[in-house]
Length: 203
Image (cartoon, rainbow, N blue to C red; front, side, top):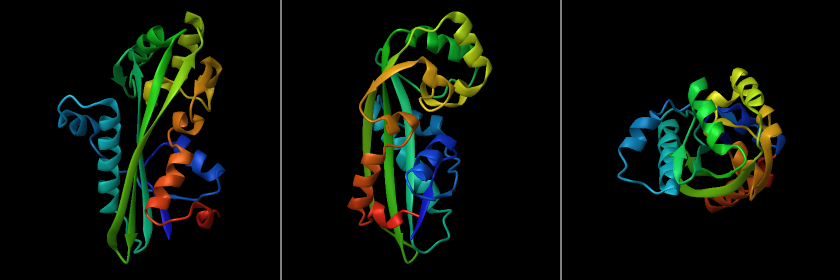
């Protein structure tokens, strides 16, 4: 049975590979803004879950393997009750860090797992994981240098835990892998719900 990661995130792929899995990568191409706009005042967990499900559903249509498990995720950071995704521009990234520095946020990741047997969709399981992230208080020069690398522009909340952004994270309360983008404990649980043992998928 083939594991398919419905994400272009190199961080998620790295987490799975370091945990013994070797997934194929299929990018969903989902319009995340359109999915979010279709929801009426969603709760944070509802929003990331809807995005993860949309990505999984899109990739189901693209997978040619008759037997596969598709894993899709979406992450957002809640700062002061506001949900934020990828900043996309340097200006927005700097604004985010001005709010985050010296404070805390909650990183939410929605997960959806879809099982395909004999070319047919047979089972599905979904869940969310939230982790509190405590940020350091970097100097303006450090923030400017970090944003100039381009790294924070393409990640939820404008920071990473596993790369350059790790210099500016004081600690986390909860699951570190979820902060990187995919929760290994939750994924193990969801795979079990669709009848797949993670140990049998270790390469």
